[in-house]
Image (cartoon, rainbow over all chains, first blue to last red; front, top):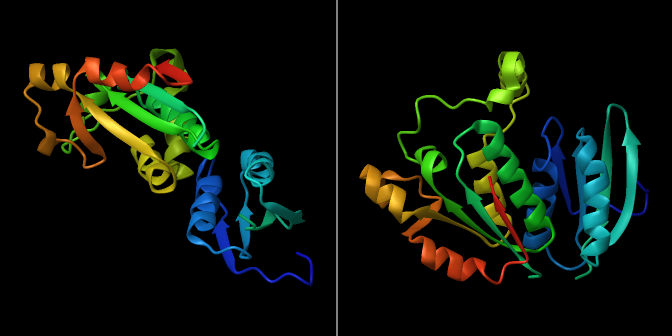
Amino acid sequence: MGDEVKPTKVIDARGSFCPGPLMEMIKAYKQGKIGDVISIYSTDSGTKKDAPEWIKKSGNELIGVYDRQGYYEIVMKKIR
Amino acid sequence: MSGKLSLILFSGEMDKLMAGSIIASGAVANEMKVDIFVTFWALLQVTKEGVHQISLSPEAGPLAGEVMRVMHEKKIPSWLDTIRQISEVGDVTVYGCAMFADMMGIKKEELDPIVKDIIGVSQFMGMAKDSTMTLFL
């Protein structure tokens, strides 16, 4: 991820299938505070599309979707 | 909250129950309230003792064994685990069907704690009438 943003919480949902990773992200979001940066690792292809869409639709900030080796990382910032 | 899904689970086949739980998770992700009414064969799947056999729909045919093996191997969560998970995240309520429970002599205490109450169809339909989406599986 970007050098400037350090996640408040990292969720490792690798190996978990739809809807697991997205639900874990929403749970972390609901438990978090405004300004929290939440990062999720996933290997599930549905989540790669669903999570960024959820982040935008819910009025939060999508910091980025990064391809890692064998998985990808989605980073969001809680702004509401 | 924006909108409400009323989901009636009737089938006790694992793939239909999984589809139902995953659709419900999509509703939660869309900030919808979710009310689930569990009846007949699906109700048997939420008894604490569980049903001794949970199978796939007949259309799985010769693929059933392979699909079950893959699901086990990849540790796919059970439909009930998915319902438990989404109820921690969203506004999800599970009700058991009074008619089927009465008929089979099933009491609330015998059901998984995820089932909040046993209610009649009229009460459920009263809650469902203002849903934005209603599904019967």
